[in-house]
Amino acid sequence: MTSSGAVDKWGFETFAQVLEEGSGLIGEPAIVDGITGPSITQNGRTLTNLASINLLNMHQRTDLRQCFAEGAHQYGLTTGGSRMTQGVCRAHLELEHDVSQATGKERALSFATGLLANVGFVHAMSQDIDLGAGVRMNNSDSVFVLDRDSHWSLWKAVEGLGYGKRVFFFRHNDPDHLDRVLTKVGGGGKVVVVMESVYSADGTMGPIPALLDLCEKHNAISFVDDANGFMIYGPAHRPFATEYQHMRERADFVMMSFSKAVGLEGGAIAGPTAAVQSFELLSGTSMFTAAMQPPTAVTAREIIRRLSRDPEIVDSYLAKVTAFRRRLADIGCETSETSTYIVSVPVNDDDIAVELRQAFLDHGYLVPVFVYPAVKRNKALLRLIISDGHTEDQLDGFLSTLATLKEQFKF
Ligand SMILES: Cc1ncc(COP(=O)(O)O)c(C=O)c1O
Image (tube, rainbow, N blue to C red; front, side, top):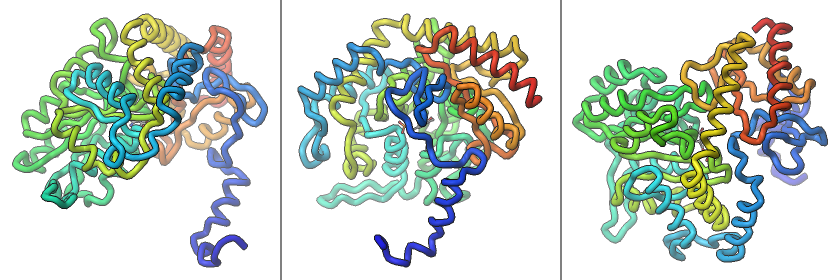
């Protein structure tokens, strides 16, 4: 006996039993060995991996691993304490400087993950925080209006604020609905509109310029979660340059994750100097938890610099995505209406989706299948992210398997 009997009434025994036996998509996670990327070794079996969010596969480059090792050598493996108690590690400051430049914002603050950046932002913008010594910020009158498909971290962060009181949603990517909600909420107080650039489930690009117009019309602050688009979109020759130009020039705050294109771990918020500076104290998720590890900060900065210096890395990746989308269309797969690198293929039927996942595994492909509650019931989809490291053979094999399974399962 290792715990008090009081734990029993929570029902973990039954829940864990269900996990162990496996049911639908829910089961004990496979054990992964080696380095994840275009391939993955799960339970001793190597599969082609379409589930990795590390799309550019930068972490497999020898020189970047060397950069990580040098960062570890220079700064050690950990900050060992918060900014408030110890001070700010130079590696983080340098990363934040480059992030603010990349986003066109005045200042940036890094967090251990993107999720913590989101939670910290909402906390800072919603609480009455009194830190003593005359340091107080009262945001207990603020209101949040979120795109309904916003990431879990954003919904979790606003959870305690009271839906219908300080929290409202607008229909996914629907400016007309946002206009109506903002009219109802009123622009007299502190209002924050939360939107994303690239949505991670359906892969759509948000109508950023139209949403920013409405923020200005209703005198609301804009917050764009750019976790998925950071360092992929932005330059004038790439898709969605207009959205990114507006984001750069007009969004108040932009959040990014370093677990996607950068391919490491961590996150940041960029925005006006005074606000971002205040987030060190007000977010809670900067002061009361660990930071990014210093070698990660050093390597994230190097990857951001590399991607800016050598646009061909992302350009050739996006060309690969375009070819992949074209080939999906050739086999009759409908995909999301905006052509980002996140490709969602509707399956709809939840039961078929569960069977499909196993069928892909049987053929040697790890494919993320989103079913309820990640998406609405019977709106299941395959969420495909190809890796820059996938070989032609891997993609050919995947597409012909998809064509076969599409025929077999009639989706
Ligand atoms: C839109 C969005 N926001 C936030 C996050 C959280 O980022 P991180 O993985 O860095 O915590 C994710 C990651 O899945 C995301 O897709």
